[in-house]
Image 1: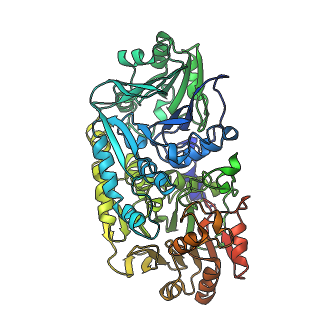
Image 2: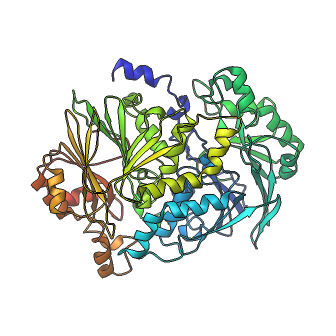
Length: 322
Length: 315
């Protein structure tokens, strides 16, 4: 390697995180739990090869309910299927991928949608994908279908003759917060919390026969967040560092700019600690961490949180099951 | 239970760490960013690659996970290609064809380098239909664009844009100081256009196949290539394929209208006198899985130098 390349490598634009794997997935669900939550992608925008883009799935009765579709969700599903001796192998079969809930329309949470709309179909899924999300979800999904016309036309009318229905989508735009879905396994409620200039950025509260799981969108704390998280068995929440904010590769050039911009989008450790304590959350799981510690320590942001939080908290990894 | 995984046993075996095959003194490098295909193999990302000349990357296809695939290449081999793979340089892409496994990563490639400071548009060369694909994606991601352009972040106003260069017919499709790119068509299912590309630089000739079948024009296009990257499909274990119909007769009819057999590739590479053959987009279907099984099948017919690629391999 030339000296020139080496210099470019060390202050790498994506941060030190790209060089550090957080380790193998863990089975952290309580014994006997009938509702499991798997983190399909624990990453964010930053191109971390050890963390897929933001995505998760709640599994009840071998039925998956997906949340967000970050980069790599199709491969994230397989990784999770094969983890823990195949615990979720039946539940995450392509034929069972029917419902997805989008928290908001930032691309790091939706770039996996083309894969999720089209590749399960090529693998034999004949059911449409139902997408719940903010106003704008219909535009997203309809134009993706239009964009991938070349693929659809070839696979439907070429020698392959894929089934005629599995590429289709059904969209439910969420006009207002409140209950957005219910079936015999699960009830889903949406709450809004602020994230940049989005009018809608949802966190979802999933209630099943044995657990309450809350999954946040990116975004700030607030009354609605605290209401949504009340007495949750597990709260999955994003978090951004205060200690190492100066290392952020976005949000302006000066420290003042970074503070102004980044805190209009994200949550601080002390805010999350206070909110989770007041909401009496039983277990807190960090997703979509913006850690920025250099040299990189994948536990640094968890440790930062723990200064203010005495409850049980985890920094998630891809394929962790809670 | 994992043995019965619907996508095949290949999905639970890691083919191993990336390798550096570039000869000393060479100035044109090829990195396989994603060596996989449709099956969601977590150890092989969706099909994509990058040719690097003079610190300038020329991307081929945008399979699932390309944003992370490129960082995986950039961090491999002690950062050998890291200065070429900075976001502001990720601005030129060649699409072989419009099957979604080769394009599912496009939203990432359109939007994430921009969120990381790229200001130039993404220039995409591909079959007729590429413009429709790009225009549809821009409409689809309108809400993201709008929030990032007009919200507190205020990203730069240009780096999200795309320019479609539709390839109307085979021949020279691109040329600059570093590289000349020629496209040739070969049959793949019912596509009217499915391109392979021949890249010529000052020190190497690299040929990258689309998915698809052999033909006389394909042999001509691959002639005397220093590196020939080609898809391959098994004959021996075809009955294990999870697609292409229920019976072996159906599979034979359907799959061979899309893909290439080992004996055919061996004949093609021999006739074209390629110096090094590299397998990509392998469909081996071997149970229990052996990641070199398809390579061995090819070697029954081929005695030239040949390698089964892995993600982040550099040639």
